[in-house]
Image 1 (cartoon, rainbow, N blue to C red):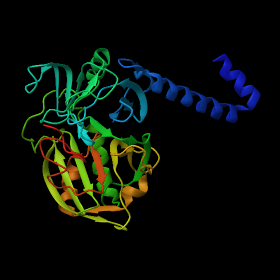
Image 2: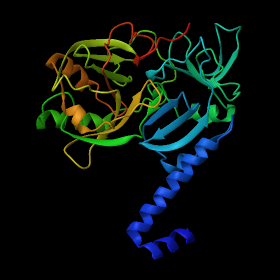
Image 3: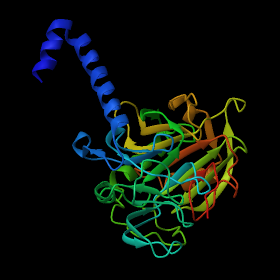
Image 4: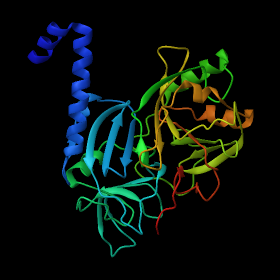
Length: 340
């Protein structure tokens, strides 16, 4: 702290703060790159409360944990080996099991398991040799897997990607996927304030309970086929047409996580994460303009508004939202098929 004060005195408050922030960021990135297999960082105090998002960087073999858009942890990991590659895309945690054993690989232990697909892809404790070595799962250091298990919940988004951008905050005036209406927003505002936290929902039912309005809800908007799908507990409950302004311009691959009512505008606050399946791709950060391009029919809009709760996901993609890329009981959306 003394060095920080001295730096600000020498350079001026604004310049000193900017330089210090840049230095901290550079130092943190170097620390992440220098982590050896089995090592991790864990700083939940940086953002004690709020919605989680987990990003697995497959090329870097790193797991990044964000809460309220702030990175609170980074860990080394081991993803799928050649022939058993870990799929890329957007997933949600389907089930949690503290003492899980594999039903496919000789009853192998998979402690602190956060399931991503029913076909077997999950986050769990395992051996970390320093390179991709699993059968498709994401292996984690044992202690890190325990810590992560203690803060995740069914519905937590997990992005498996080749590249990703840092989360950004998006304040969208009014509602989402519709024209602004003050009376509708008042109704949604009341729901946001009274919505129940589903953190204790440890086991996901195989069939979605359509009447369970606290269940994790995801919306997928595909620019490729101008469609919108609403998923509850991973099962499609509504589908319809999406109207996209300037349809020739790609939407990009983005995940918007609803935080609640925006304090800056009469609307909603989101954390947005941009990602790509391939490493080295230039990413345009998600912003309010992307949401503003989207509209859906009134029937599907009503379904969305009925289930609008903090933690709801809005996923945009430029690939078709058909069974080859989205299967109801497995995942939200993935770009590469999972290994069996």
